[in-house]
Image 1 (cartoon, rainbow over the protein chains, first blue to last red):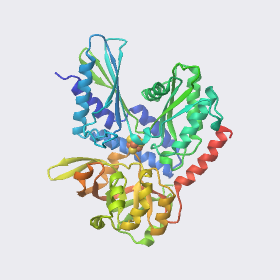
Image 2 (cartoon, each protein chain N blue to C red):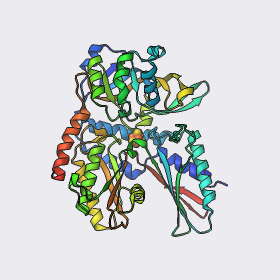
Image 3 (cartoon, rainbow over the protein chains, first blue to last red):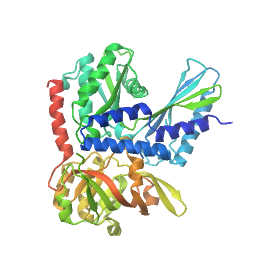
Image 4 (cartoon, each protein chain N blue to C red):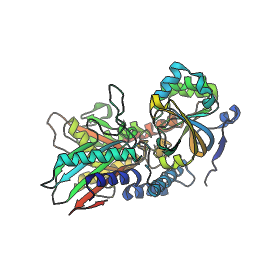
Length: 289
Length: 196
Ligand code: SF4
């Protein structure tokens, strides 16, 4: 009988080779908006062609399959440590099969473990599930885009950002400008307002789990997401930073309570190759969404 | 109107390379050799003559591909560009030492490389970041690999024969840089958006 090793492997394969349709749809919209014959449009055409080829061949969309993070929701009665071991094994097998490139380097000895398993790799978090299904969200996040992440501490006089949503807006515009095309624009932003330094960064990353076509339940944040998307696209950085209308594909914002003395704004930058998939196991039947 | 891409066959004359300008879309046919951080450090520190046969007149590609061993050979699975700026300290030196036609990468490079391109008549080509499958399919042959044992798969010198490999010139041999232009234009927009 298949278990979490097999299901985990299929989850990785899908994430690595089959771009989520909500992301693809927004890339397509961006492509249609760019003027005919422009380099921006040609780049987005190549991206879409690559997405289709990867899906058909089951090969990684991008050779940098990034760092792997699993977010597990577990009903009562499951053994978290057993699932952790199974997911690690799935990662080992996925690496052998070429769904993942070995990306786990020891920072002091420079030695690569070769199988994508190491200290905090894959990153796995457990939370209790709301019902009796196991859900596992996976993100593969590339190094080039991870390097474009940023954290601001408000107030920040250099960009005239105060401790309010207008200040948050300034941080985000500044960060997208700094990133230019380096994170393989067009990008997707996960943003977290508040929290401590570490929690805030993780909160920002988790916003990347949201689908691009969802709507923030908080109307103020929903409005800020739309405003930021439109303003950042006015920067003109464009696909790959060649210039154009499509600098960002989406902006997702969450928040955490903060200490009275700290006001952090954390930004996780994800490239257009936003490889995330969800595994749901209900009554022993697994499905990758 | 779709601009027809320029076909570039390597090795190319200095005149041909010097005629390329930022914004030109180019399809490359010929030999390209992957090289990342370890390779660049090695080329600058050791300057091995043994690499001349694969590098001179060709292109270095900033790429750490996914390769799968098949029998005696290798199959290239996914091979998009990696960030070039990490090689900024080395690149101009490498271009001059090995008389490269240029490099392929992503994200662009700095002023030192720009000066190197000008001096040697070389070009910086930008490939589409993330297009790993599409770009791997333009590799018609994995000719050989060097320093595999020493550097490992992503960092080794993979000698690739490519046909119609799609790129955009973003830094040319007359000092032009699309990256500089976009940075300047977007900086004006940033100032306006932030009211600074
Ligand atoms: S930033 Fe994303 S698309 Fe670009 S090379 Fe890295 S993983 Fe691939």
